[in-house]
Amino acid sequence: MNRARSAREHSGKRSVLQVSAVAAATTAVITSTAVAGAPATAATARPAPVQATAGGSAIGTGHGVRVGTVKITTRLRNGRYELTDPTRGGLTTKDYLNNEYFGDLELSKPFTDRDNVWGNGTTRSRQSAAVDAHFAAEQTWDYFKNTFHRFGPRGNNMAPTMYVHFKKNSEQAQGVSEFNAAFFGDGKQDKNPDTSLDAVAHEYTHLVSDATAKFGDSNESDALSEATSDIFAAMVEFQANLPADPPDYLFEEKTYKKPRRYMDRPSRDGKSPDYWKPGLTSGEGGGNHFMAGIANHFFYLLAEGSGKKSINGVNYNSPTVDGRKVTGIGRAKAARIWYEALTTKFNSSTEFKQARTGTLATAAKLYGKSSREYATVQKAWAAVNVK
Image 1: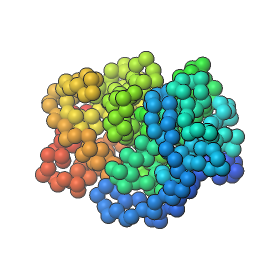
Image 2: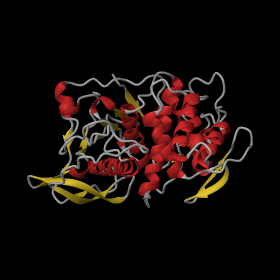
Image 3: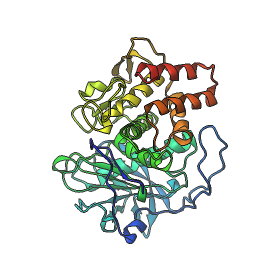
Image 4: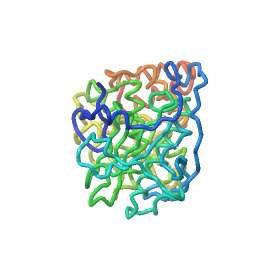
């Protein structure tokens, strides 16, 4: 059985979500037909998927706590609008009602509205955090669909359900693959919801990883899962290009006073290692989120290169273990290499050295073994001391 993923700094294995059969049946509202067969990957044949039926879909206006004012897709049914997107596999956002019992999905409540204008941009409206989660999940669906032809985390045109207002005073965010769902707490005093674009994309990506590589047999494997979620969370930010949350290589900088993680130089958080070394088992500060810094650093170097750089007004200065310069190949190519490795090379026992082998194999497949892309994958891994 797959395990629940968390975006908070937890150590050890993920907890398993226990729910009733009724709860499992209510975790998603699906209005589309599933696609038969395995999902296509970036470098393989791409069968035409069965599109979701858009009956009853409408475009609403949302005012989120984190995402600002955005357009979201909703469903009109029985004279009221619902936070269900028929055009994206039935993507649904629900209110967990601050229930302390983890798994009582049948006690959650659908969000409905009369005028299709949602939230007020503050935590005074319970709809505001729902706007964040719904919009971010739509953006993540679109990123994987448009970039890799992947429809939903499992590639079957079934979207996950987003649950906001999870527990009380909870800083927890968690993706649960068993039920194709993710949960987001409201933070301290229930006034700091963990629903930023990168947090939601991070948890959505855990559902993708659990449907493909199924990481988790070791600390390094778990760290690669966290890194994969950070990598694609950053990519979703660059796609969305939100004025309220300009894209960057920082994690949850809009939720807390300072970023939780830094991809250009992970040690900026005071805990994460910049480089791999023998005996590193759970991150220098403890926890697989911190150990993920090694793969995050690799990806940043592969995409952007080493040294000083300013992107969207954010200053970066990415070092290498031996001082050698790395010139990046760009975000799109770096993401394509990582996704292809995730879906065709990585598995539950993959660790950093196997990740190096897998990304080199996909770079060779996509661009050729004599290509600049292949050589840069080699250099970027060497730069974080994975050889």
